[in-house]
Length: 364
Image 1 (cartoon, one colour):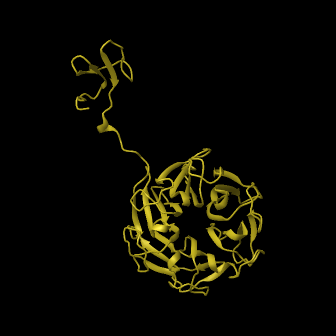
Image 2 (cartoon, helix red, strand yellow):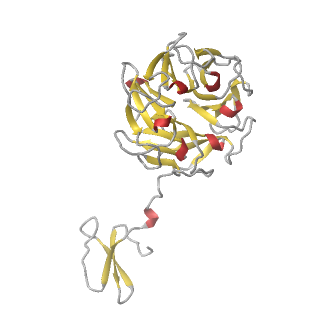
Image 3 (tube, helix red, strand yellow):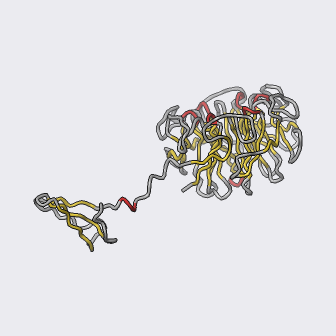
């Protein structure tokens, strides 16, 4: 409205007979004195020049891979990136699943370097067969959930090969092997938490252990009650509060468990069947939690979106992506697989797996 020239303008009265409007100021209330008069229409005046645009969906920038979604195996390209880690000095580690390698790049430089794997599939000490989630400790050692090799590998900083630290490279359901490990977390003591997906459980492996213990789910049995899981995928460890968050893929929910005492799971997001509604998820791949607010961020893969669930909320808000619609532009995703926050929680990072890129979003 061009006639809004006064900062304390509140209402406009439009005279039907003369097709003119009069600007009222110094009105006694927040909304002005709206008096009904014959032949006049009184309106609240809003200066659209002062209104911010919509907060969501957030606009992302590509920090790894090609923004147009092209895949490749050069050092500036990715093929189905999955796991992510961001360090305090802005080093981004990416599990480049389709290229059987782990890449490291500095934020702001789209060309990275291969720091684990060889770019060739395999189950040797120098190769991976579909690496999924990763973790990096304070010494820059890299832990990798090597899904199709049924093991977790540790590549020490600057090493040219890795060692098995969970599983034994064969599939099984006892306490020693793993069966399609996907989610991964490592605590400050070096204990390893593994989403043993095809066994419908999460295992904890102590440092130098040759077998693990079940801390969530029931071995080999899927289910939807609070004792069971159905294909656990991504993990997030809240070590300060002794919570482990689990993306329970085929139960379309996020479960929270205590890791210090035996417990059943608590549903903190989803759990209302597969769907596109705000209170539903569809194939959640990953989860992370704000240390500042407790907000839960979910990579809702089949809905092509990132959902944010506030503490105690019964539904989420789509902050990235368009629900149920895949795409390649700056606000869209195509099957998000991993979601993380940087240390200051200024930026959110998403592995846009089917767009072969990693996106960075500045949080409002």
